[in-house]
Image 1: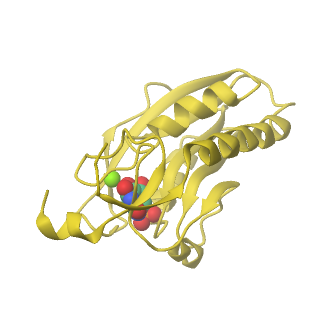
Image 2: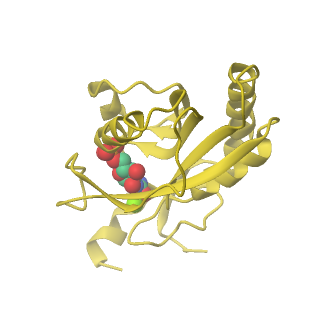
Length: 184
Ligand code: XMP
Ligand code: MG
């Protein structure tokens, strides 16, 4: 699949699997005594694989919600100005909410999302991201759970895309620069 487009596999399917189970276990311990079902908010489309695997690995009941957001302006870097493409289907007031993200880069998207959801008065609000890039440390965004800290490379697979491709790869890899330059 996608022969030659992936320069190197950064995280294998097995490593993702193990990490998802580990994160779900941590979350389960932390939320064991809360009242009501945990509400998982997946950020579309990138977090969709993570969301479905995480929900199945979590030993306690959880409800699934999705949100789709998009940054205005530049497509290569986040501007911090975010537009809601698809909002949550229900009220989160009084609920324990865990945002599931695929990747935090500048942290601007997440920072906006946290403010937006906080204003809806959840009982608690936390973030679980599968991947985090080095720049994320510059923005003061509280992230409760991080799967992998990765180098500052553009990565694809397991939900992450380049021009909507590669989301269906079972592993996470860095994209060969030839893909950007040849304009797939
Ligand atoms: P910020 O910079 O606001 O943006 O944290 C996070 C969003 O940027 C996208 N992003 C990537 N997408 N491979 C991708 O497929 C990457 O390496 C990458 N880095 C950032 C992604 O949509 C994420 O939600
Ligand atoms: Mg993307």
